[in-house]
Length: 367
Image (cartoon, rainbow, N blue to C red; front, side):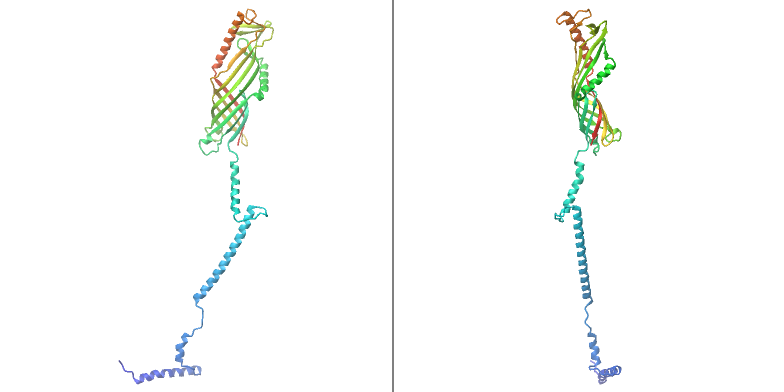
């Protein structure tokens, strides 16, 4: 351990004195306390200030509060606008109270209103009216929707078809007889003429239509039809013979018969009741606004051929020898044989045609 000298101690003690004198020269006054003490204490005398982190925290809190207020104000404005828009959409009377739940209900009702019109009536339902020369006034009701997405569904349709001559029977018969009179009757073999026609017919049926080309522009209207039909046709006509030497002559089974005078009143009748499968074809030609022209032609395959009969009065009837024909006589028996043979020949010819024709034309409307 080193010894401290007296000179060193004095030097240390003398430093405050010199420092004090320098301060007195600089300020002109003597401080109350040594400068050394002030130098030591001065660094710790700091004015009170708020720490910067705390100040920033307060500013951030203040800014957050202002932003929260602005957000609340914006929400309140938006809620007010939303309520006003809901009231406009609802369009309810002022007496009714509105709530925020009602707009959802209103939108659901509005959606149903938009889709309901498309389902209120089945698209593809069709009606038709027209004429048939073999059945009279024709009509049908059916369904065919060519807007189906299915390849096969758009190609098939169904129809229920019906026809009757009753409403137009008298008018039609007059037209037919007027035409026949203009041509002096219809001549058939054995010098026999038919005149004064009467025609009555009707039919009912169901069909399935197949459109091979679907909804293709023009060819889409062509169809093949199949189904089942039942009906009847009654046909009658007066029979007239040739006037020869003051009497009317006609032939039955190559034998001549005659009436005295110029009047003859035999009548031929045909009664045809038919039923069976139907096969035909047709075409729909589009017009405007869903209206179309339709045409059908086909036949009914039936085993029930027409029943032909001939009614010949005996009054004034004579055979080729001029002998009057009376019931029970030999001439009468021969006459009956000849008449039956002539009727059988006609029935045989009709039997070779076991097809009842159906032809129809008219106007239809498809929804």
